[in-house]
Image 1 (tube, rainbow, N blue to C red):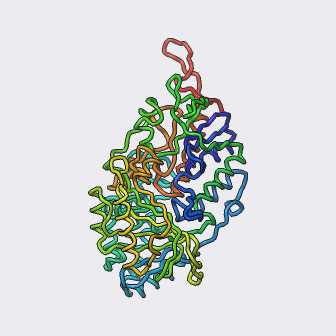
Image 2 (cartoon, rainbow, N blue to C red; image 1 turned 45 degrees about the vertical axis):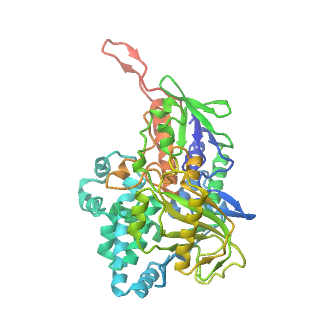
Image 3 (cartoon, helix red, strand yellow; image 1 turned 90 degrees about the horizontal axis):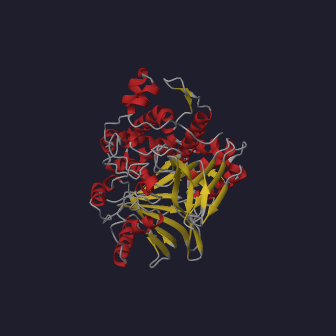
Length: 521
């Protein structure tokens, strides 16, 4: 493959595509406007301590094992320190105790039974069986398959004999309703509804199909030393060992075209870099709103603001903690989940939010001793994606911080007063990722058709492709990697088809080249 490939953005999807295409022999250069690789997966210094930022939960490890193996039979564990977590997450509500979910599914069922009774344990087992069934039906044709604009192509690939399995995906049922069939205890509905937020969606608007996310997590959560940013650095190193170049501090201003297809990129510095293929590893809205030039703006449809996923308030903190036995992943629930999402839907930050705390310095097992003194924390609260239309004043930022801390105190966790931290709001995310309003997951997965409306790898502009967490198949670290795999696969196929395009005969008996042209492979 002799194609020249320019990748815009060094997120997980872009780095995956870069590594896989470079391993096939392509001449690949990744251009990243920031000084780091990883996109949202970065490190932020607070009070002299490097705090892991961005995504925190690492699941679906097999995807990354495949990527590393495809690049010279490399192994993930040779490039990052990774270990499997015993405790998936710890959950808390007011004074009703805590509930841990475990890597051992039977241990989770027993914990649910102790927390909410034998009927709840039976409901949990039924729920996990249904979530596994949905995942098994969708893994190959959807999560790993080609992008389809409607369910019909996917159903055709699956075969009509699997119609019962298709219906078992429950695309037309709401997630909250489906959870109510398994759990009478509203706390458990709340816990398992939270998985919809993993792809930036409300559990009250998402389809029941998203229950598969719980199964992905139940199959295993791994802890990476240095967080997901360390994984991104490992992917960048993997790409470079295949011959790719990764240039940070090199923003792209425009996707260039010639003869109706991509011809390269122009950097913000003015430098022009020729390329046969351009991959945009960013939210498709950045293309659609003209951030990369007029030609690219016609390549993809814009995401209407009303269809955006959730944004977030994120505190990177270095603080002393008291009163609650944290594990690595912790969730502290609000008392009124429906009100919380109504407020976000109305464009307001939640008055009493659910709070996720990643205690970076803690392991995920029963017996890990707490760190002494201050510890590094990443604290996340869901918020509306309004960063392009709303200014978060110092007063509002302080109010959001007080609301977050009130939830933690109510559930038994106290942070030191005036703790050292840095707060990112939707307005800050919009600055980092323009044209998104701060939406961190692309298009929200609301309604049965939303998953088919995500941007796929191919665009209307020949030679321009998309990848990343805002594209097919879904948001999240492993899904971004799957999108990178898919983009690399589609590009290789397209290049092969242009290389072997036959000469076509016209009715007049003349021979002329195919209208589809491109680089040779």
